[in-house]
Length: 498
Image (cartoon, rainbow, N blue to C red):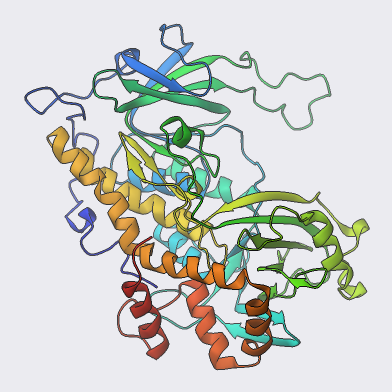
């Protein structure tokens, strides 16, 4: 379902033209008057009660401290998008990244039209060349059939997708956020949160400096950084955004655990040198077998346009076989059946096989609590239908930023909290019903008989597959559209919000 973005009743429907550094100078946790000036300097963190899974700094012996309106932890797509939108609204933003760029993340690297739209909203041009390889749609193979489906032609989304390695993509977003005024600090590993002893609200984070990697071309004995590895730091802010991924140490420290009633995926991938590197379709294979059992998931071949293809597979935990499969061995068996001329042989593998979890369908809630806002994988934003995470990471980052901008402009603590509580509601309005449908879908395909029937009979019916593509990709017109759009939107609206 493609809801209006942001939803019409979201606080951002108010005028933001006056946003700037001087707005919302009253902090949360106000006294009897309901107001409190924003603290600056080391005072902003010195009174905080550490809440950390690592060693917290409460003695004031930190190497240094810094403050901002908002701290964003994690410079992936969700964190960088949130930081960018916050900075363009005039807020002072610290973006803390535990590693240094460029750095690798496990991903399929495929970006749908939904992700392209989110990039465009950040002012990042997605054009042929310059690191982008555009694609026309999705090629699906399975059940003895094969079909090519062009991305739908909609007013709400562009009619093309793209690919880009996460090594390059994440740095592109982070540097773009920097240009917008975000203060990006690399090699800062956040170890926990600080909280106000009286209110329990988050007041900042504790962190440890990690040594930067040696300069390119440096000898084997070169030091990574002049700073000592492990130097402690405190950072203070009025709000903290957790964009720290699936494991989300910050969320766990606030008691927010993953929900066992929500789906989870696992993906593994590698890169091969192959003549198929410039394919203008994303390719998905539905025939993933464990012996005689058809598995709920798919394999992919995404040409990167640089002489390599990203090749991998993803599986859902709704199968009885989940947790008992050697994913790397499964990938190897699947690729062994490919034509030899494609080059998917070990000698052509350019990177090792790596894996990652895919947190789906709001698998960690609530998405706001006591001064901590969850975005991206930290909040389980991955689409259960297709495993897409980048688009929803960026969209949730923008939705969170819009709520935060409005919240910090309110003159009272109660007003600020009221607006912040609207962020989870905005997420539910945008994705809640659709993700509920997704949970039903993944339970169904967890049954091998259903998966086999759907694959064998659906792929040979173009009209069914075009509807399926719109449903799985969440690519419909929010209003009007064709009959398929109206059916999908109606089903999403009728489904209880996730």
